[in-house]
Structure formats: C-alpha cells, structure tokens
Image (tube, rainbow, N blue to C red; front, top):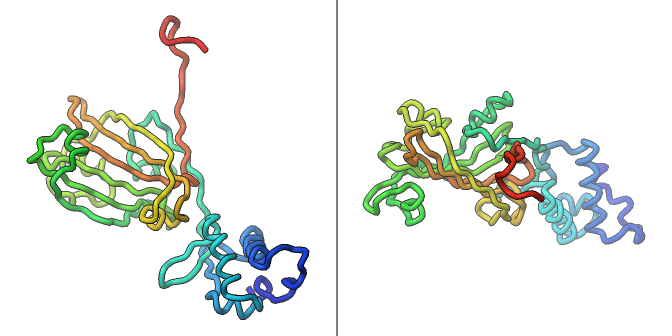
Length: 256
C-alpha cells in the first residue's frame, strides 16, 4: 500500500495530470492484484498526505475509478476495490427463477429485502394482471446477490388471490407459488437496455449511469391465467441473455 501511494514520480510533467497519474497507479495495483476485491483504500486525507497531492486531486482520481466500476464507495464505510463480477449467461428459452438459475451454477443466493407488502394496484398492474380496480396486490422488492455481489433488483407484483401473504416468499417466489399449486408454466418477457439511475445504481453498487438490462415479465398458468408481473433490473456487466434460433419452415416468414 505504501508503494502505491509513494510521493515519488509525481513530479515528472511528462506523465500527464497528477490525478491521472494517481488513477493509473491505483488501476495498475488492481490489475496486478496488489489491491484485491474488497480491499479498502486509505481515507482521502491519508492518501493526500502519503502522496503529497491535494485532496482535490486525490478525490478526482478516486471518482474516475468509481465511475469506471473499479472502486466502490460506501457511505460511512469508505472506498473499496470493487468485487470481481463473473459474467453469467441466461437462456431465454427456459422459464426459471433467479434462485434456480444460480443453483444450476452451484452458487448460493442471498436476498436483501427492500419491501414485502399489500397495496392497491397501479393502473399498469391492473392491466398486466387483469385485475379490477378494487383488487389488492402483493408487491415484493428485493436485491438478489450471489458470492456477495448484487446482480439484480426484482420488483414482482401478484394478485392477493394468488399470493395472499407476501411474507410466504422467503427465498424463491416460484417455490412459494409451487407450494400453492400456482407455479407459472410460460411467460412473455421483454428486455431493453437502460442506464441506471441513482437509486438502482446504489442498490447494485455500480456508478450512476452504468449500463443495465430492464426485464419485464408476465407469467401465466397452464389455464392462461396471469400469475405474475415482474420488472427487474440486471447489471449490464454481469449478464448475457442467449436465445437459440431456428430457421422458419419454408413458406413461413420472409427471406433476407
């Protein structure tokens, strides 16, 4: 740590602005594992003292690395080397829960609950779930984590006729629905790109404006009844969604 923040070398004007020199030093230390995921950096005032640079210069270097996703800042705790995120590939042809996806990879899942409560439905929820305005819905909002890394935010809405008590969901929503004989068998899913706002970026521990995937899912029972309306946000640096495509039978669809 002392070598990374040594004052030596900063006087060379041919190596660029001071903040950029410090930024490169910290990035190089992360690359060659002198700084490892989860390691904490000294406070800004200590880094300024160690390097002989101003706190403004130190802050600018650190902020650039936060925006690049190499460092994370936690209010009241400090600045840390960001966790290494393993990219995951998810098949679009399978209707599975997040818990099931991670279990197939041998990974444990942690849910950080934001809320579980009964509400009056919004107009969007009324339309998606086929409800009457007087009906009530169970809303579940949580951050899904694996290996200590937040990967997704799930915001699920279900009619109370399907899920009368949201506290019934502990780990897997689909497991709770299966216990009631109401596990969905098919879904319509829409995926779009998004840049994360301050709230979602904070929950996923990425910079504001980072790339994300917005996924909207409406799931159905075999009878055709709508059972679930979920809007999720996935980290763009952690997820790839893959679909298998087949050529249409001759006479169906147009040619290129």
